[in-house]
Image 1: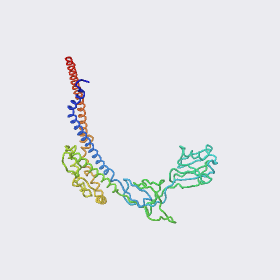
Image 2: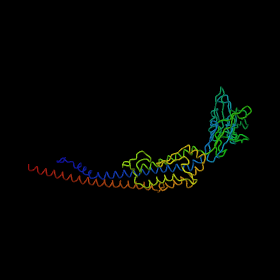
Image 3: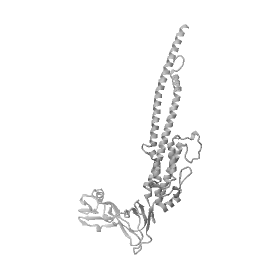
Image 4: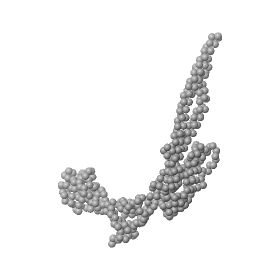
Amino acid sequence: MISSGINPADMAYQLMLAERTPKDQLFAVQKAQYEAQLAAYKAIETKLNSFSDSMSAITDDAFSKKGVTVSDEDMANITAGSDAASGDYAFYVKQLASAHQLSWEFDSIDGPLPAGEISLSVGGETMTLNMADYADLNEVRDAINNSDLNPGVQASLVQSGDKVHLVLTGAETGEGNAISVAHNGADITASLNEMAKAQDAIVLMGETNPIEIRSASNTLDNAISGLTIELKQVHQTDASGNFIGGPLRVSVGQDNEAITESVQTFIDEYNALIDEIGKYTFGKSVGGEDDDDSGADVGVLSGDSALRSLSQRLRSELYEASPDGLRLSDIGIEVTRDGKLELNTTEFEEALSTQGDKVQNLFSAEGGLFDRLDSAIATHTATDGYLKNRQDSMEQNIQRVDDRMEQHDMRMEQVYNRYLAQFVRVEQLTLQMQQSSSLFY
């Protein structure tokens, strides 16, 4: 240990630390500020994009949706596409589609199997089995199910008492998918037990002189333009074949519930956007109870006049009338005193029922609300727009601070080494002086 008891490394580090601390603090504050601003710009961009998406959902989808009211949902599930014509329909479900099912009785799993060839046909396609190739019914079943030539038949074995039944079930419903069985070329279908008929679904549309609609499936897709009907039950009939009770009544019209939900989403996204801008430019949500203007409440983007101008322009657009002269207040959407939107569902749905086209035009017509709002946010949300440029600027600022911090680290390392060399030299001189003075004692 050097005789003075001073540690040169500790002394050099303390002096270097005292010299570097002010700039370390400055760089830390600058970087934190830039990072906070970058995060704020990204958050506002996210809200703007969500707001834009909510407008697109109404323009592209909401008003084109059709709603369906069904008098008995246990009988059928009915959905409507955008091309479905509005109107009221009456249906009687006479018959459900079913798959053909045959059973062939055998004494046991081992047969005896019929000699020769068995052919299974569905819809003009046929597979043929040479029964000599199989030892028992298990092998026959597997050969049917696993064949690439299977025309659409599922085979299974059912034990009933002391008998075994080879059950053949059509893969598809409908009369055109009936199963034919031939033994050595002779059709034996009629001699087998028919467990279920191959039949089409039959629906009668209309109460007087109805139109008969037939389908191989219980799902009628576009049999009536724009409607998909999934049949579940048939109407009951009396002994004379007359339907008991009234028809299945279906009403197709504009889906006001979906429109209301989409408009509420638009309102929620608008209010969230206004809150987000307010939080970062004023330090609090718009309409919040905290009205303290102290420094602690100032947002990280308080100096950004462009964002404040955007918020003000968005609010001003809410008061403009549509090309038809309709305003938001006319359809149950109020602009509150703090610039947010509030939906009166009852008034809005009444407006949809009485002047639906005008309501749609208010939002999505050329020069309507969404056109004006899109124009207001376009310069901010573009790929080379204001928010992207501000984010790029913040990232560059952060990189510059990082570069300065790295340079500062290098300079402080040099300062440390300089102090260390000086203290080591002092200690060396002190030791020499002590050694020299000892010669006189």
